[in-house]
Length: 164
Image (cartoon, rainbow, N blue to C red):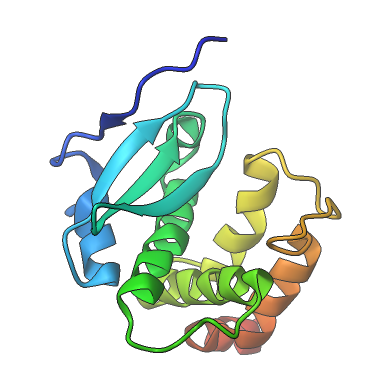
């Protein structure tokens, strides 16, 4: 399938009532973030990058076909990378896996603080993107490892674990 050119998700497009994709990204990152649809509709992934000092989040078109709550947890993860990028804290000693799993934990925490079940969304996002639970990933860890890390560290979600 031919790669489609990136296009900005219209700024008024809501990911949940009252919240646009760019509004969520700005809330997390602390500055304006352009959110673009990227790749072809069969690709399911997302990425944060900075071009000319301006933050961009790529939501692959396959992600935009998933349920909005799954899109939200993915957007929160990528927006946390923007926060890491703008943060004054030196993350240079972190491994790539630590950096990625930090974004996993904060995405789940933010989802819980917004009233969503961040633990469920984190766990369901991997199969939704076509990632088997034990799929090796040198940059992120396996989805099983990532889910366990989120369950152990997502402080805003801990009350959900205690109640169940």
